Length: 216
Length: 247
Image 1: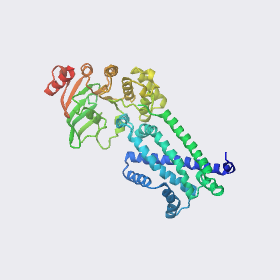
Image 2: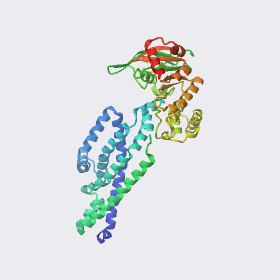
Image 3: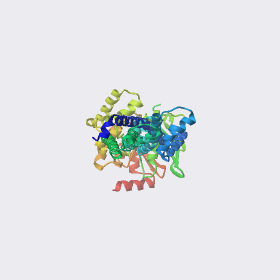
Image 4: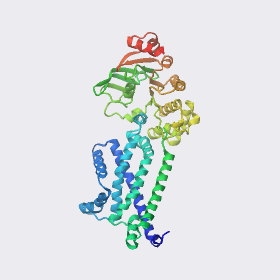
């Protein structure tokens, strides 16, 4: 391992820990948000559906960096609360990934045959039970590959948090480089770490999908 | 109360937009009766039986299921539906659940049976339809005929007062039609009230008490099965019979 990496390893590892920390929280909370918003869009709850649509379209038309500026600068100023770079980053990532995941969940929900819904209703299950017991479990299995695609994208997106002062892996690397000036070595090392983490997640996603795939 | 019809349909009208699908259908089914509904495709047969358990709405007329008005505002549809089973053309088993779980699901969540009791009942019913060895199989591992027998077991699991069959053999390969019809025949013999939309005229002749013939959204003929097959009253029914029996 190059000296410049070895010397700064603890600092870089701390950055990696932060990247994973941001990713895990954003993925968990973002998935929950996406599931709720996607379901609202699928069920077409009157007022909420419009709200959900506005949210999804807003996020899809806004650069991630701007979303982070909103959660870091704009919202705290407007609503008068204090935040940290770490919290604002997670909040922004959750909002960002949630919108894309919502669309994935919605398309998964819509892919379930309507006659299967009728079959559930015909046995006396309520609409809510049919959604929870029959439609959602299938939709989630079906969209696993797209979910993991979004998760992998998100891990790389967390690098943007460095802009609002969160020293995650990329931020740590940039700081080390500013001091040592070995851009090629340092950026290559960082790139390899992202590659390993993302590939591992991809593989995990494929394994999950292979295990849970719905055969029809 | 026993002579009160279990299903009573009066002057039912339904349309999709400007297209009428049902034009004043009336029908009554008594407890223990087997009624076969036949007619050319697009005649409204499937729509009619999907109105009976409220899967399709209707614009006017009345359907009473055990005396309860299906289309009324305050009707608890889930509760009512649990009292009539339904079997679909394409089986509609839940693909992410084992055969046993398919049969147990509504028992647990609608009838509030314990999981163990529901699974026991599922195994009993699987034995009844000749599939006791498939309890742990997934639907995708079964043939069409086997899937449809599981679907019948799923309907039976709620101890329904009647079962509606929507073209239960239309999606099956010829060699599997027999096994499904055999299960249905046994049900009829056991006294189950059944409304069956089907083109299986052999089954209709053997098992049905009455034949209802529909064309363009109307019930054209409603007659005891022998009478229908030997001496159809209308030309439309006679034409249909000659077409379907010829091939």
